[in-house]
Image 1: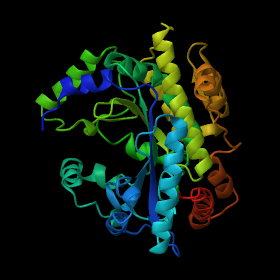
Image 2: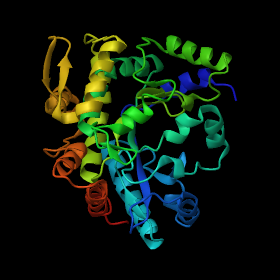
Image 3: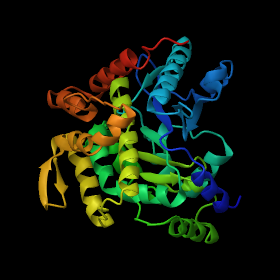
Image 4: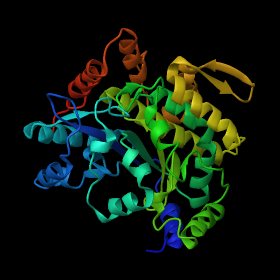
Length: 381
């Protein structure tokens, strides 16, 4: 199926600013052992009995993972209301069938070699194309789509957000475990996914729709991709929706953190769009410098230090959310976005338990309790 880039440009040119879509990924778990269980197809079939869930539940590579999508919200508040309703329905559905849900960037207890890839044409193709890279990708994340009108404008918003990505990753880190052991990292998910998948991580700055579209044409002509979603960058203009999709964040073990991060991502996209409209200077860092901060976020999260390249000095990465909130203050006031973050993020809370000698099962059980207590609190209308 050829990429219809003419239609994609029209989609962006008719897009409405700052509509929002939220995508949250959850582990499917045995409540007794907290190990992954391949129950996606069963839950998907059951979800068809609920018209809301039927259009909101999606698969993500392996049968022990499920994604819930808000659909298009008119703004962040509408998207959050939609997502809360869908979460409640999903948690009730899973609970009725004896499935627990978890929300961290990696699974501390289950071996990726035991997981089964979903049997669809799309995932069969990925399995054949990527092999070990796909098999190894047992990861969970939080994605947010933000409407941005204008194809050139959307590409340049992505360009402006490249240096912001490591800060969002540091704030969101929640995956210290890889292959059942303490990896020493704060975002093992990023190391597994971003460092292994092709066409992944921080993209180049393209500057225009034409340059971005030509890159996609080259990939298509050389049989590197057959669909746009095979470009797995940490931020991308989504040609099907007319959105800027932010994909850098780990899944969050509490609903409050997930919602705060979603709000912050929306604010970052909206502020970048405002800066573009007003001709603010572009911080056009080369990929090698952005990647330096990405690595620091992966390794140390909010316990480390990031680099302020404008001043060529380090600063505590615990300041990442504060810096982003300060930068986005004008547009947040306009959109009514006031995200609040806990003192310690998911990775830090897990690492504090690890430091006491707690085994992976105990640490993960604490995160699953957080998820159960916070994600299913809204009343379904």
